[in-house]
Amino acid sequence: MREFRVFYSVLVIIMMIMCFVYQSRLMPLLLLILVLCPVLSLIVMLVNFAAIRLKVAPGELVAEKSEECILEIRLQNHFLFPVSPIRIIGDFQSLHDNEIGFSKKILMTDIQPLGSAEMQIPFKLPFRGEYNVRIYEICVYDLLKLFRLRRKLDVCARIIILPREKAPSDGGRETETDIESPASIITAHRSNMFNSLREYHEGDSVRNIHWKLSAKQDEIIVKQMEQSVNNSAVIFCDFSGNFGDNFMNKRMLDAVLETSLAVTKKILLDGNSVINCWQGAYGSEKYEAAEFSHYSYLHGVFTVLPQEPSKKRFDELISLFSPEIKEHHNIYIITPDLNETLLKKLEETGLSMRSGIMIITFDAVKAGEDMVNFISEKTKIKLIEINDCESVFSL
Image (cartoon, rainbow, N blue to C red):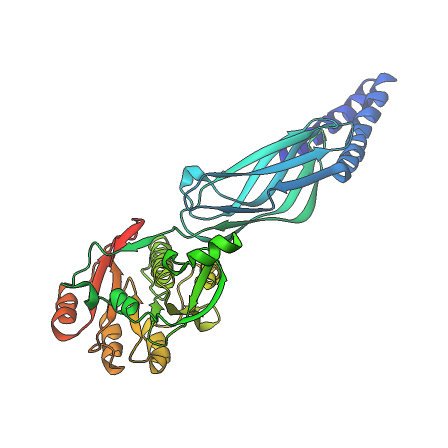
């Protein structure tokens, strides 16, 4: 815009000189027109500025990880003059730069008289969480590119990226018999005492369906079994890892979270209860899921958890909740960072020599061979290493 102003100023000066050099009636008229043009252009810009409307659609979008999605920015001009150019400033993603989030960018477009302009903004996010595509300013220029008006905005589109659905299988179990694993121990404690009848809910076991009564009432009725204190587990989620690399931090946070959801879902589908413990943005938290309907709440909480590593050490979480662990509890410790501090805390709390303890870690962050040997030889902990990129993993 500076070069247009310089050019116009030079043009006015030349025209004034020509008015003195050439004693002609035409020159003052040309100079007057030259002076009035910016005024008219400014008036048109002011009217155009008031007539512009901006919308972002959809206002809220739910997508899967790495799914390519499109947001649409729609600009509408309710005036008889075109708007060119118009500058949009906001937080967008550049797919060419392989960005893992949104950052400040500038988009340029123009709008025809009484028309509209649509801009499609593609994005593809590799990590779960809550994102906001925000437009916070638009700039409009006059036809001569001499003036500019800015309008502060707060237009926001909310994007929810869901965690990847994973499922544990029994194919990679290292024990000789099924009953020795934590998962099978939990199942073995399931209570078979009948309590009540209720309507079928998604996730209920087929073996609990009351077939005769369902046939009579023309709807699925299930037998509600009495919950036993023995059929519960505790999952410790390590969100404290800090690997120095932003991409690896987010990847491992997602890996812990998705693995925890998968294990929780399996335990609940088996008719058992589970307590999830983790470090949240506001301190250490826990959530007890006693039936499958509780899983959707935990899934929603985990989906929008902040993507930054927790400031608290993981061993502090185990120390905080270990007094609540009972003898019948089976423990899943999900961590990408298997270190000496964690093992020391497990020894202090007496968990390292208890049966039914499983540490789940990831092959993207290899644990030291000495540490692996120590766990297998000096403790009763069962160590499982899984691939965080695969949708099915073995327990």
